[in-house]
Length: 98
Image (cartoon, rainbow, N blue to C red):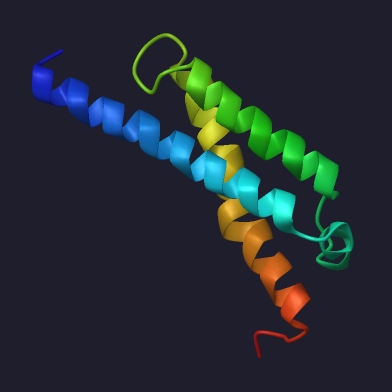
């Protein structure tokens, strides 16, 4: 792998880990009842998903034999970021999007 490609892969690796850490931190700081009010999995389930995904992204690399595990972990984290997080924010604000 050329040196510039190595650095690009490292940035992708660490960006995924950073997104996972932010998602986990957000999941920790939310109220437990907000998850059920948003009709999503429970808080412990999302803590396990985001925490496990972050750990998987730390253990496996974007480039290599563990790439499929890294990608699965990123997808799980992104589901939280783009689906669960906005619903939690909406429920806790008490408003609707309309």
